[in-house]
Amino acid sequence: MKKNILKISILCSLLSVFTSCNDYLTYNFGDQLTIDEAFSKRGTVERYFANVYSYLPNFEDRQVSEFSAMGSMIPLSDEAYCSWTAWVNYLTYNQGSYNPSTNSYNIWPYSYQGINQCTTFMNHINECPDSEISAANKKIMKEEARFVRAYCYFNLVKWFGPVYIWGDQDADMSIRPEEVDRHPLDKCINFIVEELDKCIEVLPLTITDASWYGRATKGAAMALKARLLLYAASPLFNGCDYYKDVVNKDGEYLFPQSYDPNKWEVAAKASKEIIDLGLYNLYKSNEGSSTLDKAIKSYQGIFFSHWNEEIIFGRYVGSWDWIHNANPAILTKEGQTGYCPSLKLVDTYPMEGSGRFPITGYQSDGTPIIDSKSGYSDEGFVENFIHPCDGLPIKAHNSVVGRDARFYASVVWSGMNWIYQFDKENIQKITFHIGGTCGYQNSTGYYTKVGYLWRRQTDPTYDTQSGKWPYYTWPYFRLGEVYLNYAEACNEKPNREEAEALKYINLIRERSGLNKLEEAYPEVKGNQELLRELIRKERMVELAFEGGGFRFWDVHRWMIAEKEFDQPIIYGRNVAATNFEDSWKRTGEICRPQAFPKKYYLFPISQDQLNEMKNMTQNKGW
Image (cartoon, rainbow, N blue to C red; front, side):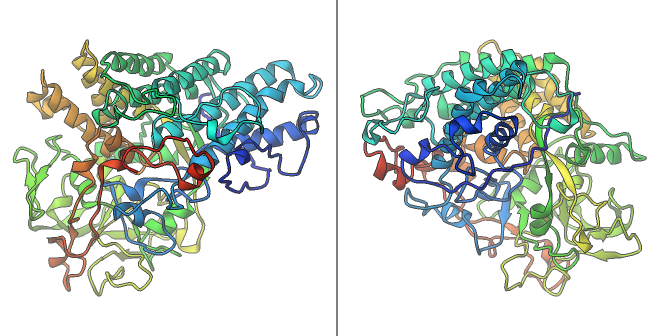
């Protein structure tokens, strides 16, 4: 079986975050067991093993907690606009005032705790008698811990660039904190790749015991390796001029000193090896009476069809946090109306008829520059428009007419019907202008300021009005991402393979009911720059609100965040209007601006860590 969904009970107690270097090295068994005791019995080994898996990111959480390495960067990205202002971490970052003493988004200590817990398990699992756990199972469990450790290192590199590589040694309290500094980036990348290659040699292709869905497989390790190598080939990590002069305490350059185009070749090969396994397929639904309806259900089904064949590695989770923050207030129990797609993301979804992305840019006053070949209009209304998800006529702004399946699966707009699938007689209309059911004015801070809500992770068949929250499969890695990774690498590598790039982009588009990219854009043939731009748009749409923020990390690794994220004015629809028609006008009067200083390309090492590790090299600009 190819379904690998995390369903492991975390039995160990929650860990607190430490700031001291020595605290990274503390064993944690949750109940003060010694190492000998912890690895003497199957039960205690499995408890510790569950704790190892707990260090994987918790991407379905709406934001990164200041007490863990888990959570989502989506509120920091240009794909979203979040309205809530209490109990949040993202505002300081978005306003450009983040600094090394800011407590939020400090994943450094938690990640190294995870690394140490994994290393301890790897170094001691064989002490468990074969009568308790077979030698064959112990061998696989060791590589699973290695996979989690590699994931922790990958997260650190993604956030900070070069980091300190601890290796396989047990915790050593005698190490002096002032002797610790970061290793060069290429050494970090090579170490993680070597670790994952070891995992790939041992881990099983599939999980046959349903009670262990979610344990790492060969495909999971291959997918992490492919994503890592894609990042390593990208401009931020591949000869970036801005970071070339950064050296550690030993005088070693921490970043590559020149661009290596062959890294794209390596990245392409890693993604193609996953495809060639033949184990995974894009999820497609046959439900529905039309091509568009089937395409909508196919895209929704990535999350709602549990353990489907597209997911390479994932976890089985409840959706309360998403529904709570993204669903319309009043219409659903505890809905808060605060987790919203940005107008920029809404503008990016292609048109079903032409297959083209409708907006090519913006004028200084926020007016969209419309592709005249796309078929898009930002003016006027259509009476009796039939929304493909409910089949009921509504008055719809022209901007929501004729979009692709992913748009209708994901975006809620003003004027839509909200149909309770458990009570189809109870239908209400959603409006976001003042006086509507979801008014602009709300003292809690939870309300849409852009005129849209997000519903992709909201399963409409569940009784959310009564607080019955659905479960879904949240993918860490899925085949759709691998196709996009492969297409990007094929377009960038020295021996450019345009036909391969188009082939796998078109498989993604076909599922959404779109024509081939070269049919929508005949001018893309032989145009690497245009294909690069279109691949980036496809990633923004296909992977929206996934992976803890694919868009956030993509814009960083491409080094285009100063253009995309630094916005003195953020535009949305005029939800402060007093009538429905005027609420569809674009305005920059409601939303907060977003800042992106150049130093933001990598996070700073926290001042707490620098106080302990006094010779640790800080990232540039901090």
